[in-house]
Length: 423
Image 1 (cartoon, rainbow, N blue to C red):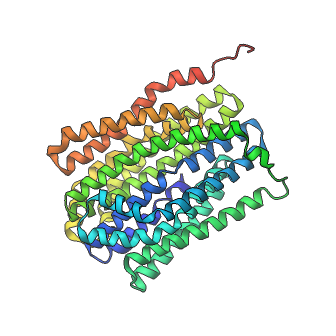
Image 2: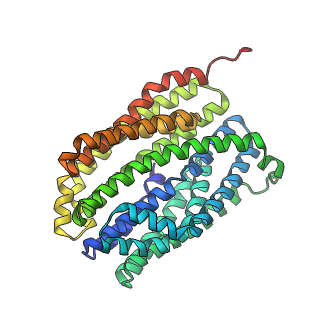
Image 3: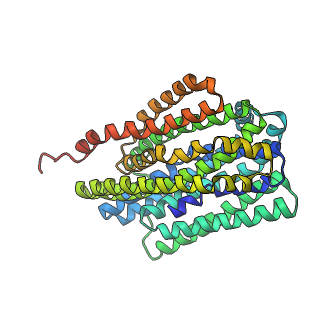
């Protein structure tokens, strides 16, 4: 959870640094661009989830060679996707920034950030694979070390380039690229140390048809699910942008609270993926059910703690993130939606981890699409309430995700651990 908590800090640090300049247009620009990259990279989060789940299942099955093969397969796919994103950067920027609907000044600032940070795509996606592979082996401390290194370098470089060298939004983007590069180098060194002295993975095993098809099928379903989830947050940001620069900037500040909460609670999902994946690989229903109970009970306790922290320290954190008084006041007006969000979202995160660990990706995909429809319907009903209605619809999304997965869980558990004819 601590390792995951550091993930959104690249965007948070950029927001704080740019926010200290007191320009709502620049803050809106970095907010729009950060959300785009969070969502763009998040679309390929199946690289981390797949590496974590299949590595954990290989660990449960006692197949060390397959664990190494998962790392190599994942890195190859990450490199291919990352290079493709760089090649397509111009149309991507035009489409994504146009969809945001920000003002001319916000869009201009966001373009500057986008044009630089897109070069981190292969690095960031490869980091997903390495981190998932480490957590899949229950090496969470090593994953934490990599994440801490990325964010310390990012924070130091952002302060230097933005606040000391006055490079503005370009400096924040350069800092993000440098941090991802150093993080990947450290992660690969750790991976080499963990596999030192072990025989190389045969090419035939890397390209084994059945395993590749299974990986692609699960990753496809996770990607569709993630795309539906991203669509909801892009819709949220686009509606914020259409409400004006001050509302966009205020929601961007509050979005950092959501991102911190989401990545913190998603650490719980990572634990669920590892524990449930390992139990699935070992065909151990008792261990699987025990992991589910632990994840759900601890998750609710952590959600209460996060909500309390937001309630107590939210106003001070808002003041830290922006020097603009109108933005501060607007963010305070909607802070209580953020306070409530962990309580609505915790079961969604927990069941995401359970479903991915058990490779119930198709069901997770279908339930997420239904949740997206519920979110859009809620927004239509609550639209007359303006920004408050937008935040209310987001809480409906969280509740729908967790609730639908909880209802489907018993049937999937029975089907996955049904006794075999020989048993």
